[in-house]
Length: 338
Image (cartoon, rainbow, N blue to C red; front, top):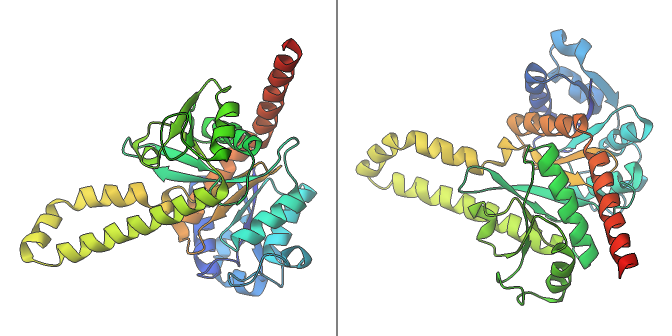
């Protein structure tokens, strides 16, 4: 049974939705939850009939959202440090956290460690598409400054994630640029193109609109660009939702029309709701780490736990290791032949 360490303290909304999400996950999935945090604050939310199936590992400290990530490694009694240490010790296979994302990345990278051969871990973020399937942005914020070889590895890790977790047998890859032509882009994208075109499933440059039209499965970029895309997309989705509500309330006719469109609005909300996917995997770590939104509700936590379980069951870090080693072997052969 997969053991999932869950940071119960770091989210903006406190431990209640995190524990409720864990309880919902227990109703649907087979796993062993380990709630990490202040036991006195966690225990009241755990029903007596579930107490025997949930382990609580006590930690006095947790890293608040407004605190810097630089000192996170020194706070060894913080909930995310203790949760990450459980993977290091072999007491858990996964970590799920809605806490400080910078601290989670730093601690997971240095405490759990990277998959052998991985130069930089990367955040992979799900994006909705008009085709009803997700595209995946890699990197969505872990690495502000990147080199071409980093983007190549982001592609390889994204491919393995889409295969293992999303069940896509042959994921396609696009390089995010300011135009589809090979000549477009900055120095980084042009150098990355030369490496990525060696991948059989590389489709070339893609533009921002292609993230949402489903033309490629994995969209590769540096973390600075990826995070801007992610935050902009969230802002646009919120703005559209607000505008729709305003227009619907503007007249009786609009409100009546909205009643007939209720199921369509429900489906739209489902497609753009981050809670449907739970969180963003931190790819390249020698364990399974899911970073959730700070305001995650119970549904988001439940789905993040499911992501973690699937990643563990399909041995995602091992597949990433094999993919990077396989590609390096191919490159060595090409160099020898040349």
